[in-house]
Image 1 (cartoon, rainbow, N blue to C red):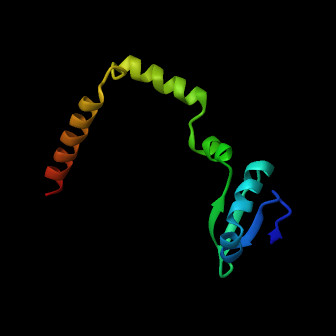
Image 2: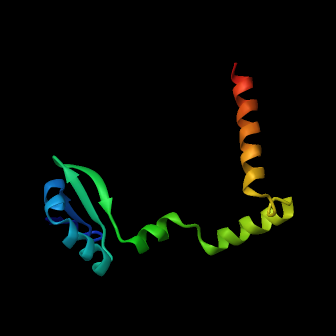
Length: 100
């Protein structure tokens, strides 16, 4: 295993990751560090805790508040899933028609 000094990310080979996957999962969760997994010297994936993933993937509360306000202002906050599907289908049909 190698470490980079900057953010203390650990780089490991795919073979080592495969052989020690359970331990790596525990380590990532406990130490809140990411692991870069490389194959033949090329980085291929990153293993990170679910908490860190959610922080990266989920919008900030302020963004959600703004989106909610905008949805209310436009009147789209009460749109049902069925209505959303209908809107998507019709939009796709129009786009497909214009491409021809």
